[in-house]
Image (cartoon, rainbow, N blue to C red; front, side, top):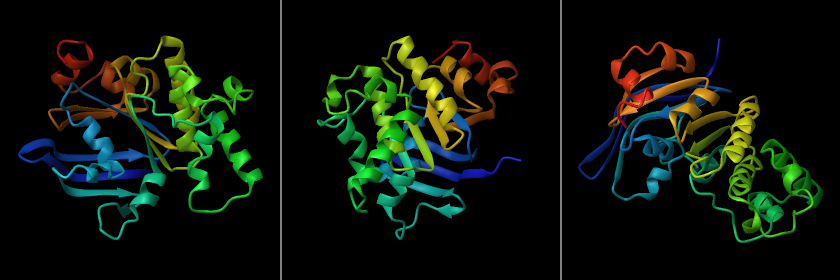
Length: 252
C-alpha cells in the first residue's frame, strides 16, 4: 500500500479576481512520479509553485485550503520557508545555471548555513551529479563554466543542484521543453531512477512524456481536476470524455 507524501485539500488559488485553481483535492504518493497535464491556463505551474510556497512571492496571489507534506501543513506562518524549499526543490522550464563552475553550481547550496568539510562537499557533489546522470559528462570539466554545457546538460546540472540538498520532493516545470530528443531521454531515464529516493511531481512538456515517465497522471482543465488515475488508465481507459479528447489532441 503506497504511503501519501503530499495531501492537497480544497485548494483554491486566485490572482486578484482571476481564479487559477478551484477546489482541488489530490493525493500524491511517496516515491512515485505524478504528472500534471492540461492545456494552457489549467493552473499547473501555479500548483507547482504552491507546493513549495514560491506562490508567496506574487503579491496578487491568494491561497485557500490546505497542503500537507508528511502530514504537516505547509501553509502556516510558523513554517520555515527556506527549509520547505530545501525539502521541496523546483527545477524550472529554462535551465538556470549560476555564473560559476560546474562544481560550484552544485556545491552552492551546500556551502550556505551548515558548515561542511571539503571532503563531504566533494562527496555530495559527486553523488548529486551521478544521480542526475551527469557525472560521466562533466567529471573532467568540474572547474569549467557551467554556461559552457549544452542545454540538456545545464538542465541536469540544475537537477543535481537540487539533489545535493537532499530534498524529499522534486518539482519539475516542463524540464525538457526545447531540449533535443537525446537530452530529453537522458532526463527521463534519470527520473525513473530518482523516484526510488524521491517523490517527483512533473509538468511534462507533452502528454507523450507523461505516458513514458509517470506512475499516475492528473488532468487539470481551467484550474479544476477533471480526472486522476494511473498512467495506463488515463491513456487507455479515461473515465471523462474531456480527458480522452485532450490526450488524443482534440484540443489544447
